Image 1: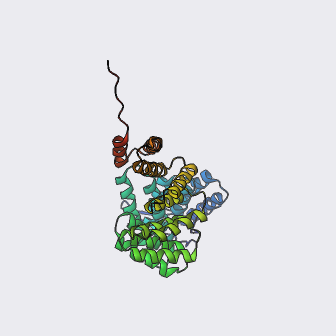
Image 2: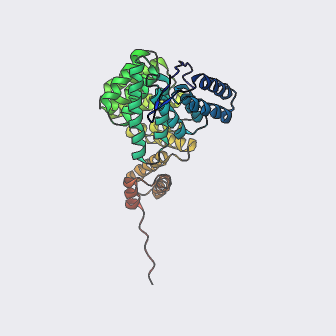
Image 3: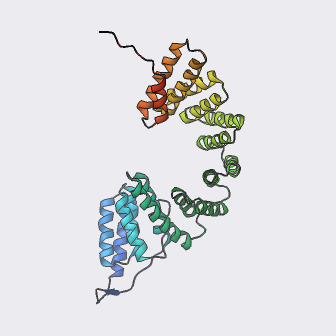
Length: 337
């Protein structure tokens, strides 16, 4: 668990439903301590039982709710974790750790959501709780970077940029913040700023094949094929088993009409990942380009069709490719009756 420090805040007696109630705070703390000890030993059921006693003894003991949230997250029950963290935040709106952990949990729930609308709801919740978190602790790197990522998901690129830069100001040596900033700049159609951010990230950590793909794609959009090729080559050098790197390298070679190198790269991508639909699409494109220069090579056309069929089997949502398949499928004469 990322956050390990705690601040013990004991609630005094309060009013509930119009009646005077005195909570047993001392007993609640004893249950809380027993629960945290059980949690450290991996006895999660026992820990939850003790923590439940703690909040019954003192429903305002925020730390107990937060501990419950931590246990639920460890067990992968993120809905229960969110409920517990929400109670922790309600009972102590000035505690940073439960706000941060609630934001992380909302992000996890958004990523796991099956419907886009549900995911958007969780992202919006994460934004609101992270805003509270960075108000409580403006100098927290992770909270600022996560808030930036959530704004990016919402398409609010100016806000994403603002909090990403805030994270960079907090930790100027973190390569991932610069990488995220590059992606934000790309989304804003600011390719030169994106390239600068990507390079800053690579200076801090060169071992980032995925970032190199982003850099290469940006160079490609700027019609700088040699620079793009070098970025993709570096990606495959950093991780020779990285199928998307080979696939993008194949695309780069194809755009430079270096068909043998393009075919070799696409084939390597498909070999490394037989589920890479883009790689099979690229193989088909290279073969079909060769056929169109010499239509007597029907075997090359057939190889193209085989590769395209495989690509569509892996990803049927390629209407342009489907049109090409229909266009170049040989017409078969029906036998006369």
